[in-house]
Image: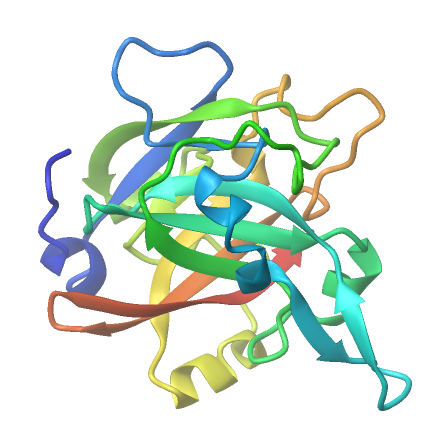
Length: 223
């Protein structure tokens, strides 16, 4: 995989990389997958996902069950992947949808094949491959549907400052967006639901020069 220069994508933000979901295995190597089983890396690292949270109604801790959403080859680190997990309880991440209390988990980890175990599999999603598209000018990306957009500027559903207040205070910058407008019709199972209510998830990162550090789920929105 070619290592991209992040300068124009994450600093100047004039360009961005778009990715799409495809049901059939493409001829070229995939850039990841959405739906299906989590990476095998998590077979022995379940504690990374298990999260103890304070209940919003009392001081007792409750356990949150997570479901696998997607894994993407890191665009700037060829030996790493980015995996996203969502709570199994929709109300949990509706209530906790903005950093630093966003319940979505974004985890960077070594490259891993898909597990044969369905421990984290989301029954609402039918596995699709993630295929890398072109690097295009950021303004062009605003007019086309996509599954994932890396770099450039966010394609907002709701452009409200309060979503970014804590992120900017802690020097996080926009890294990527997962947009449900880019789902193929075949991705949601019969009687399944859109995880983000036909919305979008915005992932932020600590970015310094050409170095990409900590990744966090910034917030998610729906129309």
